[in-house]
Image (cartoon, rainbow, N blue to C red; front, side, top):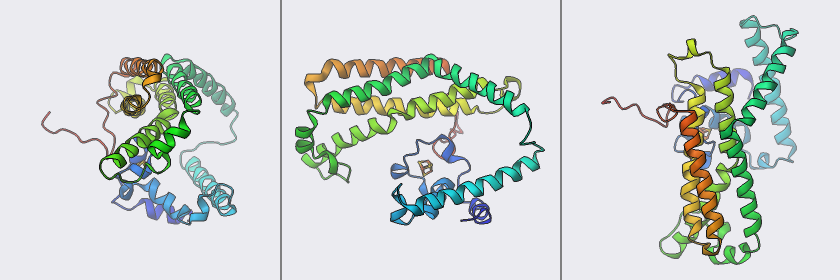
Length: 266
Ligand code: SF4
């Protein structure tokens, strides 16, 4: 796909503008794949099964074409906006950005989210010895297909709970970094009238936290001997959820394109 193809693809009115900005990137589970430009681009480029293999040459060639296309689009945009890409001010700008990155990493929400991702790793490491039996008992690897009823549904629900935990484990941190960084960039007098990207990112993090809490609740019933560890995990997540609610009080009200509906009666 070249840049003209991309522009043409982006003009499709069926796509919901910006839907991919506030999703959890779990395309496999997304009900809006047919309305997402990001998904369509991915399908166009990587439909070929062999391109899914990161070691496959086709993948890297495709990535290199994407780089070239991005490069061209960047130059076009810079020219359009009168941005000098060689300007020395860029150095100052980079320094400021680095400083903000550090501030974001040190924000209490981000530190707690980072800690959570480490706790998840610790838990999986500790449970590793138990997993051979658990995998056999609950057929973990196959549990992600559509469940039948009874035992199969139980297997699927355990496997899905683990999958949910793994999916959001790092994403919560990434979304919170973006939320905090966004807050540091905001110019309040301009942005007061507009929905804030930081609230959108915080909302995605909150959804990830809540889904993770639900998943750990499910996992807990399979590991009664690890109840203290799991309780600690749940408490940590709930504390994180509250911190995020406090730091981003308007996050819940953020309307994510496609995923949230505006209640016209309110
Ligand atoms: S909106 Fe859905 S299809 Fe598009 S990137 Fe996000 S999860 Fe994937």
